[in-house]
Image (cartoon, rainbow, N blue to C red):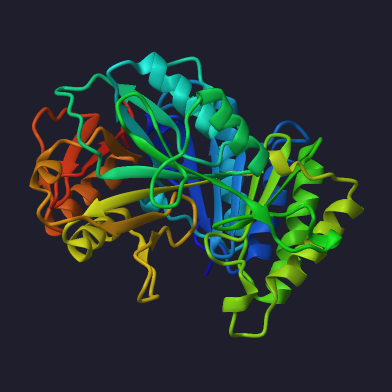
Length: 422
């Protein structure tokens, strides 16, 4: 029996309980049986918006996430509430149940001695834009935002958290030239801001030498990005991609943003040399490119980017297990890989590297980079319990909207909840 629409909820009873208000918008996740099933709901969402600008929509083989900014923090306007109810109703008509407790958005916070200089560095490295406040955002709305805080006590030690970024080769060269830095590190890819926070800026490559996959860029994952003039065209491409991916039995990430569709393999999911089931990602990529060209779309290879976070640890297993448990991530089963991955591929990959056990000063020093997680009030309660069960501890200075915790080696996680909870 199909479950009825769930409209109770929070936010002054203005929106359905399928939805969670996070720091920068309202989100909902609806389970789906396939990528094509997610595309069906995307089509219904386009109908709700009646040919206007679509909100952010992420299609996965397990479901769909929709994210849009409400008119006021923690509250739907009457029009937004009507749209949210219509989307919830459409999901249930398609047999898709919501899962509001798992919705979360990850971002990065950096302690800064000079936020202006740091902002310039990270904006250049990432190709981000200022959001009008003290924050940088990905203009494609896919990768984690960055914000700044004043350091409580500056230290010159190398941090235990760093960032990996992949961009097209020409952009990597332009960044190095603009910053006037010669890359360093074991792989000759590392750059650093004025406080010594490190980023490995990696040049991407091509998926194959064949012209029928020339739209695709590749490094940790394979990505193609297409400007789409209307929501109708965007959904048409998403539907075609979903059908092709389901037929090939290769799960893909399809992200719809206003004016753009990005198709992504996910990290390490594109390499045919490692595929044992006979499927071919390169062949699928060629069919997707042909479908996009058939809709009159032209790829923008300069708009692709990949971002992940690395954590140095003395006890890698303990720290990795902590973050997997608290974030609800899955551990990569490959014995030589320390990645943990969002099972829905909505938030960044974290990976872990061995740190020298004798480096006690670096271990005790407070990191300048901190992971923040936007969650609903109820999800924050559940994650607080998970933190303590996984060996973390609460730090001082807590308040109702920001709750900061430390993992077993002192790396920090802050849970951010909205001004008006559920």
